[in-house]
Length: 183
Image (tube, rainbow, N blue to C red; front, side, top):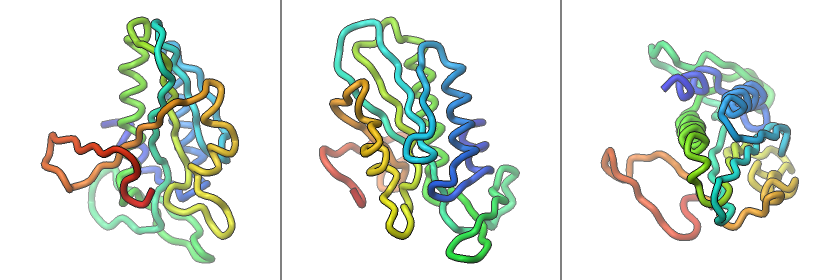
């Protein structure tokens, strides 16, 4: 809850996730056995956890950027962040759930780091910038992370991402093989 609320309150636009990336990297560095690399695709973070047993290399991915939307509620952790968007200052908030995605992936990393001796294979944690908008002539954060080698060393065999939503009842998980949403 604390991770999610911190990221929510400190929302940053695409390729501006500097404080978010630093926060994520600090949390990951506190977890045993996790190697952290920052600055991938400008503000992306890659962390690697090598399990104690042989197995595949899989990646788990979360997006970190927020939207140019002013948050209008009275929650104590609401975003009051402002940023320049298309030439004018605007409010910035996590209106799409990326704050929850970051917190969920940090939670997965924390749990897996505690059981790393029992873990088969290697897990790569990818915290992606710029899922919402790469900018004029700039690729999305996913494409730029791949181009900058985030899927190598170790070579990732499969990537799993998640997205919160209301298509399923609370407590349910929906899965699908292949692309989903805008992918």
